[in-house]
Image 1 (cartoon, rainbow, N blue to C red):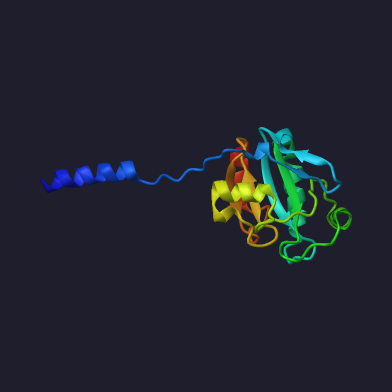
Image 2 (cartoon, one colour; image 1 turned 120 degrees about the horizontal axis):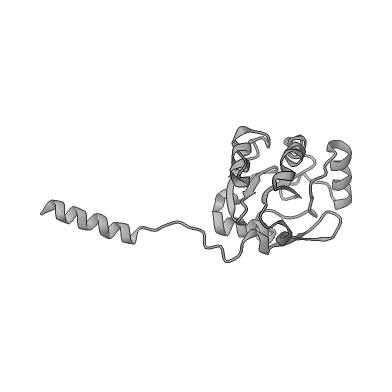
Amino acid sequence: MKKLVFIVLVIIMFFFKNFVSANYNKIFYDLQINSITGELINFSAYKNKAVLVVNTASYCGFTKQYEDLQKLWEKYESKGLIVLGIPSNSFNQEKKSDKDVKEFCEVNFNISFPLTAITDVKGENAHEIFKWAKENHGKSAVPKWNFYKILINKEGKVEDTFSSLTKPMSQKIIQKIEKALEVY
């Protein structure tokens, strides 16, 4: 009898288990943002590509990560990866104008991957990208500091997130990018 009660309880618990899954009323490709030069970047142009979204800052201790982000871009762009730099002053370490950020990135790091206008990445004023990521992936998608990374898969959903400490060319990120791109 105890076994039967246990089995019934397990079955009932299974049916009432709170499955965690993102709702995704929108996917990444439904969103858009202004580029660093003012044009609209419509993410529908990135369909069927993986996107590494990185909030950046010119005066951060992690700013040297721009070098590895450029290497990632050069290595995987032809395989379908978009590296998207989103300059932000949410942590009070960014230049005051888009023009200054663009010049800084080009002169110091020869950046050729897409950069956006300076954008809030946390709090009430966060851009819809970051609100969408939090809504669908949870608090782990909210940048904790500059050079926080969010990997979007080819389906336009959050694949994974990486802290500022995780270097762009780390095996951890490379493996996730290659999985998202189906490159082995």
